[in-house]
Image (cartoon, rainbow, N blue to C red; front, top):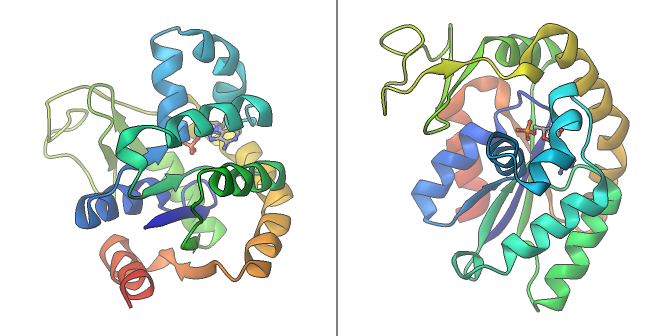
Length: 214
Ligand code: AMP
């Protein structure tokens, strides 16, 4: 199954993608995670992407398209994938369509997660991430057993620099500037399914499963 999870920052794409990936056993590809890892490792990609990611802007389309094209050619993606955070622009969506056509496959669903602005901001500002295993927590909704420590691997939890209040506002603005044309594109392809992700992690997952496994 080939799925795109779209939605605003904070809509729950990463959390749902991770759970779904385990359930249906296909890889979860988060472009944000790939970029953050590249930045931490100071690779060529990381050096290129750092200022965009940390400032809440979008990494140029060319860089992102090349990155995803390479990733989708890997062995583990041959039976499917869940793309989280890509495409974010119409140019990326069209490029993805082209690369999949070249590989003689196509998307099955674009699941668009929707939540109110209030929920998005609350989720982003309270989000904490494990430095070691990248597990996600939330200071109120999903707190770790011990404050600041990952339940899974005991790694240190941190707040992403782009989850701070000033940057969150810019990220949401950029999201809003791009989302309409993306939705129109995927509605036109009849791939788009809207999911209410304001209802909590488990209920959202159930709704997603109902859509894709029906
Ligand atoms: P995310 O973890 O999906 O919220 O992504 C974090 C940041 O990585 C974004 O704010 C962008 O700076 C960058 N990024 C991730 N995916 C993309 C993409 N498809 N296009 C451009 N920039 C991206």
